[in-house]
Image (spheres, one colour):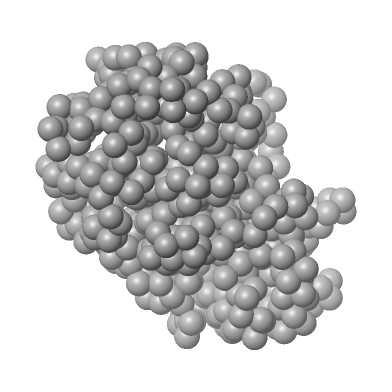
Length: 493
């Protein structure tokens, strides 16, 4: 058994190297297609799966998120079960794990263009110049400026006329016939209030045009609809009132400029007073073309068979991606069946995933089980306290550990500001039912830290990968990782 275990950890030709862990390549291709929260680099996932599981073995991720763990597992010829409460996460994971043929997407987009482009551009038509406006600059409810921008053509500014203001006013109060009514909570951390509606986040014209797109997507071949819907959700932030205007760029360096530039939606529901309304068709077209480029750049790969959990367990499918409460879904997976449980669970109060994803899920028409989310939320009406989070995390880690084979491993990507959240992972080794030994941890490096880093008081400087195993064998490949430490990370004072 010792020799067999050693052989397992010496195999690394198909995964990622220690050197690559220190310099992850960043989010490119399909990984960069959608702005899902908390994405993890592919390199550490490949490394861990390569060294902590056997080819043909089972990898389970109870919080699959954007699907990177599924991509890594199937690439290394493991069976994979990914679970997430967030409907958009499971749909995005499915796209990443089993991408559609690029020709199907090209055909679908041409059909979408034929059906929807002209009706949408008509809602932005400017009589003065005889073409559609690409950007409207608003200050509150006052239309200040209009632009026409194109690739390599610069920017043409057009003064709004009464006809332009009337055209915009025609869509005020428009009520969607296709988008599910959103559910918001009062959460100052993400600039949300419970009374918000779709028209607080989008102009009436944008809502109308999203409806047009949703109807048009219904007409494309069924096999292409999931990708087109995801492209629409990926573009939705730039279609919203949350696109801020950048002014005074270079002010700190003493070279402040007076011109205005287009910002982008980054996180939360901040609705600046001075904001852009961006042409909905252009937003979608940019996102679909990005998807097409990503699919074209994909290397030739084996098709991944996607089925349900039973199909994976019986060898009829390689991958299952399930929308649901991780506790309930894990219960379906037999104890002792997984080589590796690899996951990036919610980091206490760091990101309220379901609240942040509500616009996407509204557009998808997906129902959301807010009550079952494992999270600490600043929205008091949700009653998602630290106490409840700790209780749920204990249950999840206990249940996850019971899924492991006698030599299985558990790898958690984790960070939190509070001691109670860290105590949950610290006590995992001491729990007699887990049978796990804490081997150590290493810092999780990102190619860009500005979006993922938690700079609030008490936060650690980096996320950490915590590794536990049912085997007590020393794993030399892990100990060679830069920053490897057999002690638990310590919170900053």
